[in-house]
Amino acid sequence: MLRFDYAVASHVGLVRDGNEDSGFAAPYLQLVADGVGGAAAGEVASATTAYVVSAMVAADPGADPATLLRRSVAEAHLQLREGVRRCPEWAGMATTLTAVVAHDGQFHLLHVGDSRAYLLRGGELAQLTDDHTLVQSLIDDGLLSEEGAADFAFRSVVLRAVSGEAPVEPDVRRLDLSPGDRLLLCSDGLSDLVPADVIRDALLTGDLEDATAALVDAALAAGGRDNVTCLVADVIDGPPISRDGRVVGALADPRLIVDPGAVKVAHPV
Image (cartoon, rainbow, N blue to C red; front, side):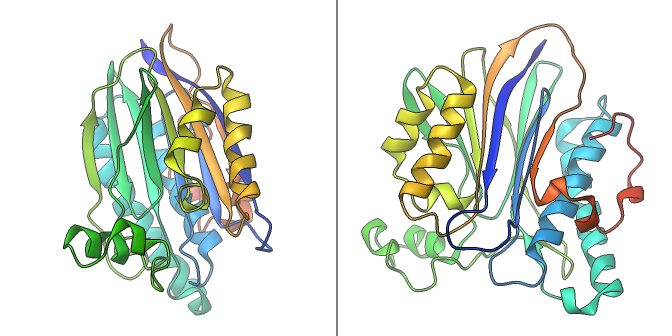
């Protein structure tokens, strides 16, 4: 059965006081969420969304993965809306979300925002996600160059996010992955600071833990001005194992989850 072997790390960075990133890494699910910078309670948004998605995937492992991922985003929106109802000062909280699910020999990718997924195959690095940002939309429309994007004043503006304000339509698609492929899911604390060639070189490190540490170190060496979360996962073919996983960042604090009892979990995250 195709699944993941993985390592995960999250660091608050060198500038911020708290970590608004959340990560969940498990044999059948890789997920990163990044509370949108500048919004209220970004850590609540990322932790709650990461919890809902990981819990729903664990609770219904036989469901169609594309349908399940869309349902989980819809439920996360409802939970964030409930959070704002309980605590009006949380109004405006939102999060990115990027996840890959392994199910019955197939893989599906979900993406909202600018946390990225990359694929390393045969020594070549490919970006699997398109940023839902103002700067990327201007690049796509030919109004901004890749070179000019680095200094663009509004490069942090995210156009699509999971929030309590309005439902969001995520990008969901099937991935063609095989044993030997290596995935990276990361918050923009890595991708905004570290060039693609440095990311590729770090991913070429054989050991998963070493590769993950090299990526975080590269982000810190580049200034560490944001939280950074990296999940590195190898696609392997092996016997079924427990779906339990590792949590990092804001998700590690259950007090940040709006309602941990809202999702019935078959296998605790």
